[in-house]
Image (tube, rainbow over all chains, first blue to last red; front, side):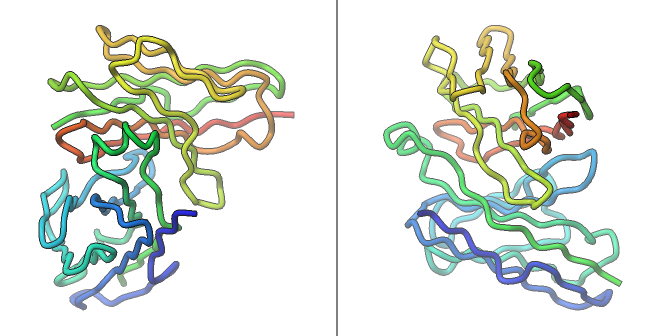
Length: 118
Length: 114
């Protein structure tokens, strides 16, 4: 059973704080993703990693950075939290695209972190 | 980058009836995956159904089926015999075989009424 675990379900932080959101997966997946979910906007990709130390910007990377030092862990960092970063954050992981086909599988999600910046 | 469009923010259906959710996408890739995910009020995202672009046959999973029109870049989800437990947000998603960044649509909130 694949598990994607996000470190916190709810988080409240102050404006200007440095915030770390952690995500761990236990299925040796190459791909890991961070999304932001807002009503009416769906899931917007912040950053994507296809291997250790590799990262690619998604659609809304401004104000965020990521770290992937180990294959199982993908961290999202808000360098200086602002109120407009109040949102639901979802982490996901998957095999690489060609392996997805071979294994007939999909991306798996964590339970989400509701971040409030005050 | 790929884009995914869901044009129906909200839909409702009576229990036991059939409903179709729409999704269109834009890509220059020829090989890709399409997904429908469900997010119940409890928030955990779960897969409903997947479709590989190279397969002409539409995917089916019990009461869920898709109408995949590759030329039109359309990927709709049909839910037959709707159940109260189908009430959720439904998201359409795209992943390329080579560019693995996965993109989602804005979602459709489906309510099944008793």
